[in-house]
Amino acid sequence: MQLDWGWGPWAIIAALAFFAAGWIAARFDLRQLLRESKVLPQSYFRGLNFLLNEQQDKAIEAFIEATKANPEAVELQFALGSLFRKRGEVDRSIRVHQSLSERSDLSAEQQVTALLELAMDYQKSGLLDYAERILSDMSAKASGTHTQQAQTLRLLLDIYVQENDWQKAIDIAERLDAGAATDAAKRRYTRDIAQYYCELAADCYLHGRLDAAERALDAALNADHRCVRVHLMRGEWHAAAGRHEEAIATWHKIESQDPAYLGLMAEKLLASYTALGRGAEGLLHLRELQRQYAALDLLNAIFNATMAGEGAEAAYQLVKEDLRTNPTLVGLDRLLEAQILAAPEERKNDLQMLKALVHSHSSRLAVYLCKQCGFKAKQFYWHCPACGGWETFPPRRTAEYDSSDRHLARLHAEG
Image (cartoon, rainbow, N blue to C red; front, side, top):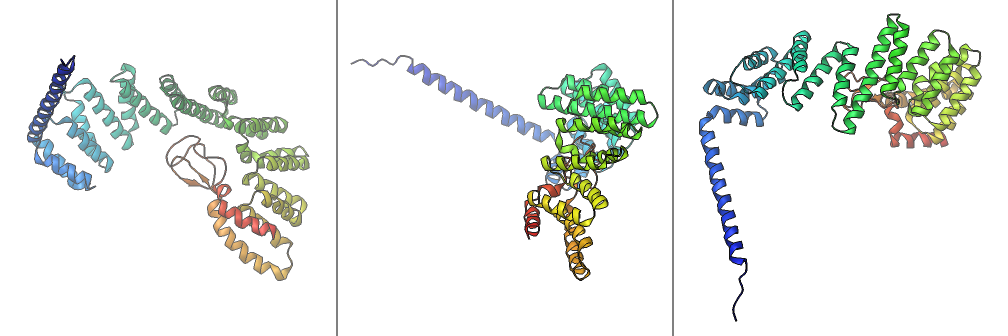
């Protein structure tokens, strides 16, 4: 019987050729690597070792030695400049990157990288004018790759935010938004643009340019219809001008936008109702909001108004009822405050001691927490002072999310 090999031998030959080519390529890559390793000075590898072991001082010394031995090692000089900047030795970083930016033998991409690094050096040293000049020129010329152009705009945007130049920040953010590759990136830029318009509106309002301030708020809402800050600010301006009906109507819009932010306007809303002689109606409205969208800031406003208008016993009953459905240590702290005022003298010392213990813990929890960097603040911020993020603070305090504290508060309320 005759065997039919078909294409079998050719497959075997092709496989052998494939493995042979791989072996040759590996040998070539190995030789190339060995050749490059011989070219690089030993100080380069010592520097890498120091860097991996987080010994930056020794790494810098080794890299300086390596760049002296091999001045053509451009990437090594970039690494050295970045190390200087990271350590706060900005003057040395500027010298490295300035020297690189003036070299004529670099590729176009390397020259743009050198200028970007130099701009970051100037920015870190506080020389914003120098950084802005470099970046503005690069932006106008659309220098570098697409990635480098985007980085140029982001750095320029950071500078304009630092300088509170909101109109220029808006212009740059709109360019970044137009070039954003993902929906998440576009959402971030539209959110930030709305916040820049709010900052611009606040600046105009401060300087008495009320029409310009209103136009900026309109633009903020056009940029991001979910921007709660617009209605918070506009309501405050109406109230400051004595137009309390308009203020109340404006603040009511927040409920349909995002009810989580209602607590931020609770005190102001109640003040406008009171100014109109309708304090009881305002308090009733806040209580209804608390039933639907329980929040500590809402509870605080209701508690203070009830305590002032109806007395300690009414405030105690209010908080006790709230604690059954929304138990938190901050609420328990309020409950004890009302309990002390209504308690007989023989019980006040014990209650005050208990309140002191609860308050010491609840005060640490009654803070706003930046979800981007973890910065804690007693007051609410639209712009995180630590990481610079916009709208990174949820409008609820951390105590509202601590289940163990809720359990303790529920036990006391039920007792």
